[in-house]
Amino acid sequence: MRSPESMALATPDRLRGLRYVWRVPILLALVVLAIPLGGVVALLPDGKGDATREPLAQRIVRNWSRWMLRGAFGFRISNHGKQVQGPVLFVANHVSWMDILLLYTQRAACFVAKAEIARWPLVGWLAARAGTIFHRRGNAGSLSAVMAVMVTRMRIGRAVAVFPEGGIEHRGGITRVRTFHERVFQCALDAQVPIQPVALTYRRGGRSYDDASFRPGEGFPDNFLRLLGTAPIDAEVRFLAPLTEPAENGRRALAEAARSAIARSLETNP
Image (cartoon, rainbow, N blue to C red; front, side, top):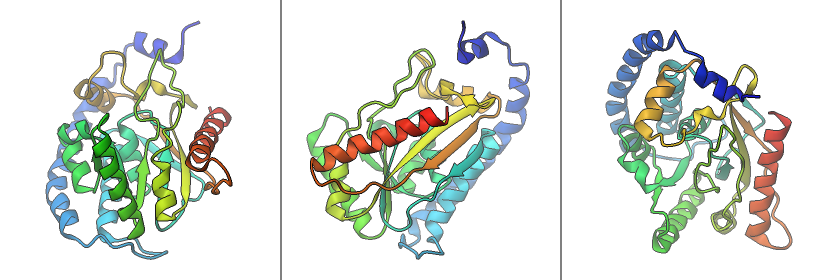
């Protein structure tokens, strides 16, 4: 029996060309708008706000991300659960490069992302303007510097978001939650802030749609263009219960607790 993803690949999408007709102009308008907005965000004070009012710079990033996903890509965004306010470490599963924009629609957190993203067209420039912390994989010195920046950001009241899996795995339409790297959890312990797991899901027709990820051999430009013309996708952000600090095993126990909570959420809401 073929999977929904393989069936979708075999079925011609007759509306794809028409979607490009209206989505490309919206995309271009948002790109043009991003240039002055990026300058404004870079100049505005990045304060921590209060319980009822987020800083203007973060509000700009959040609203622009929502316009991009809804207007240019046709995503239908929903959220569940209550996110922790104030400084917090969000830890999420990793399905697609869209994950960053999707979380931005909920909170303009400082992301930790691979250094290669900084070179991606548009996305890298916007990520840098939004305060993304870039990490060179396999470089111990880079990781130490990134963790120091994470702690500093959280101590001044910012939210930081990471994908502890360290990358995206996509095999035959099946995406699973892999082992979480435990070292990043130490940052929350050092900054003394809560840790909140976040489950990200993409759906179509009420079922999980893992084809939002990279297909085998597909690069960023091809994936970008494919998603730009694809039929609407339901993108869901589920904020789970914050973790409590364990009595033993510290960050290792926190990493496994976060991974297990997200995996259970994905199994419960397939």
